[in-house]
Image (cartoon, rainbow, N blue to C red):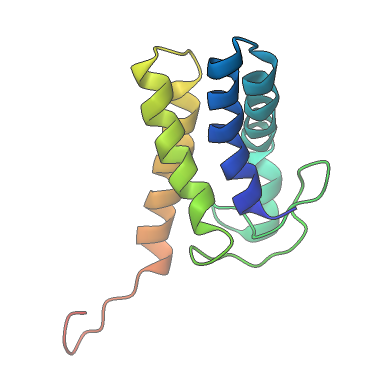
Amino acid sequence: KLLAEIGSLQIEFWYFSKLTGNTSYADYGANIIHSIHKNDHFFKKRLGYEGVYPDRVTNDLKPASSHITFGGCVDSFYEYLLKMWIIKKAHQEPDAGMFRSMYLRAMHTMIKYFVYQDPYDGL
């Protein structure tokens, strides 16, 4: 499974639950993220970095590759963590903090280990 698809499901299932009044859709989407969050130690052990995830995961949400990127097929996962944090906070949902911590850890790791500033021109 592509990580981006998992991120996309969060917002789609949450919104579908709001439209239908049936919380089972949002619960299903949230359970996937809860499982990824709960298994952070597997990702850190496999990838060597805290708070980042590979581009693909297995059906049981373990790393299916060791490819780390913040580009295509993964960037939207992190974007959806941010969006779900904002949405869930606005609706005072209890797991908003989990989305917040996952997003902030990923951004911290990205800045610390993956952003390079050229010493010559500062870009």
